[in-house]
Amino acid sequence: MNKSELVATIAETGNMTKVRAAEALDKVLAHMASAMEKGERVTLAGFGSFKVVERAAQKGRNPQTGKAIIIPAHNVVKFKPGKTLSEKVRH
Image 1 (cartoon, one colour):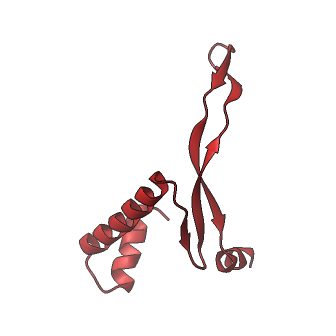
Image 2: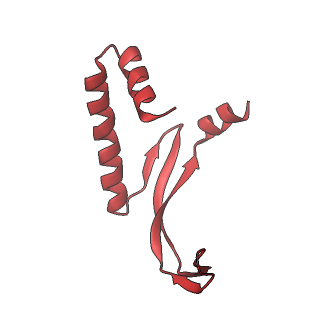
């Protein structure tokens, strides 16, 4: 499912226009991103949680030249599915 399909589903089940559904989804995602930017954990009960963790610097290779490079430390988002979501996916 992509974003436009999700917007269409929200609009249909929420009895609203696709424009309003897209605005609502964009606001939710923006608030989630803003919280994670601040280093906060975002938890959606039954679905899962998102948190930002720092990935340490590591050695890598330039695929074009084969030369060894250092990939600098950077932040990444980790997702841990909630119990309800995990159970739904398993069955």
